[in-house]
Image (cartoon, rainbow, N blue to C red; front, top):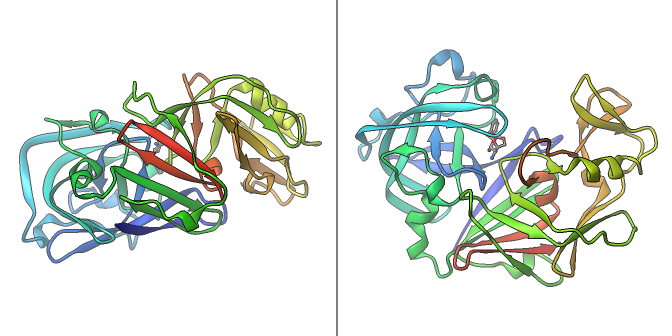
Length: 327
Ligand SMILES: N[C@H]1[C@H](O)[C@@H](Sc2ccccc2)[C@@H]2OC[C@H]1O2
């Protein structure tokens, strides 16, 4: 039974959520972005070029850990959906999250990071919570969740992100005080080693349900809610004064308007993303960046933080399946 606080970084628009992770002996604490959309635990380290390490950023230094061991010959390289990338070598070391400890967890040390990571002054790395088959270390290593799973009462973790406030990741149990109503589960098909599921339909504001199966991935490492272009257009058609900004490559809307709710259905259960959650930030004192954007050529929709922060979500590896509840 373990809980860890997820604090929004850049909290004026909740770009990402970071959790304190202790690595090494004595422990070195780093804020990591728990990412259900990838499966590698990598960190800024003493091996990361200093020009890529922003002032004050916490880094992992294996030389200061009596339990660090280099995994000879192991390497890793990642390119994420947003084009960011990182790569390096691998250590094993003690990793503790909340009260859960893995003695010889693979910790991937960054010897190279792309500009998106170098420019991110908040995070010190990522902790992947997708299925282990997505891990990019050669030869492959286990994810934190795969290592800790046998020690958990249930093979699950839950995600309770919040708008502009700290939420939590819980491992091994469901805290029923974190949601309202019922949890509704639907199967996960990990064909890309991701938490991929189907929604049975959607509705905008108070309109009736549009029954259409949509293939989606629950991704805590993605900030926005990315949907098929037809749905995105129908959504912004409900907001007077909204438009597609070629400057930003995104839909924007007048900040003084509260957008409609976006509702998605798990089976017959209606899951609500309130319109007040849709402001992803001011781009001027009148225009705001919409939280819903097009998934473009992606083969699935991406339920990122804009949707996740409105929900309580159970990532259950036993079936696998995913459970959703309003809160
Ligand atoms: N699963 C996601 C991942 O966590 C991020 S990597 C990232 C980059 C910069 C800042 C924070 C995180 C990237 O965007 C979508 C997909 O890839």
